[in-house]
Amino acid sequence: MGGSVKLDIYKIDGTKTGEQLDLAPAIFEIEPNDHVVWLAVTAERANARQGTSSTKTRGEVRGGGKKPWPQKGRGTARAGSTRSPVWVGGGRVFGPVPHTYKKRIPLKMRRLARRSALSSMAKGNKIRLVEDFSLEAPKTRQMAGILKALELSTKKTLLLTPQANRTLWLSGRNIPAMTVREASGFSTYDVVNAEMLLIQKSALGKINEVLGK
Image 1 (tube, one colour):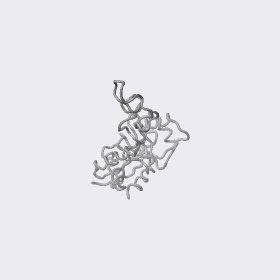
Image 2 (cartoon, helix red, strand yellow):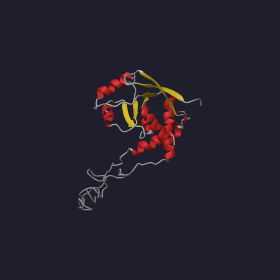
Image 3 (tube, one colour):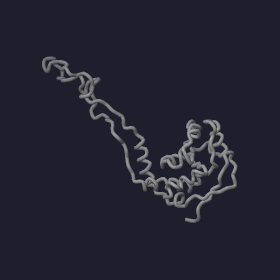
Image 4 (cartoon, one colour):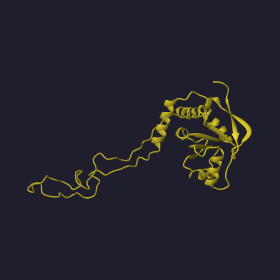
C-alpha cells in the first residue's frame, strides 16, 4: 500500500471547503476479507429476527376432549379427538415454535468485517467527507436538498455522524435511499447495503477511535 488516501471535505451546498483529511490505512486500505464480511452480515441479519413464529400442537388447541363418535359401528374411520392434525381446526404437526436465531462472532472478527467493508468502499471511491452539520428541526426536504447538492440523491447513502443525532435521523428516515447511523455504532450490513458512504468530519475521528484498536 502507498501513502494514506486524502479526501476533500465538502460543504452541505456541494462545494469544497478547501480542507482535506487522511483516511487511516489500517482501516480504509486493508485487503478486504470477504468471508469475514459474509459471516458478520449473516450474524447481524440473523440477530435481527424476532423468532416469535408459533403454532399450537394438538395438545395445546382448545377443545377435543370428548371422543366425537363411538369406536365402532358408524362405518367411518375411528376418531379420538376433533383436534387431531387431520381435522379442520386441529393442531399443527411440526409447526414453528418460538426460538432464538442469535449468532455470535468474536469482537476481532466484527471489527475486521467493518474495516473490510470500509476498505471496499474506499477502493471503489464510494466515500465522501462532509463538514459537520445538523438541522434545527426535522426536515426531510432539507435533508433531501443536501443530498442533491452533494449529488447523492439517486444513490443509496449511509450518513455517519459523530454522535447520535435524532434530528438528522428523523430528517433522513423518510428518504428511502438514506440511512443515518452513529459512527461508533454502524454495522457491516449498513456499509455493504449502501452505494455511497457520507461521513461527517468529526465522525471520521470516531471511526478511527473505535476500529483503530
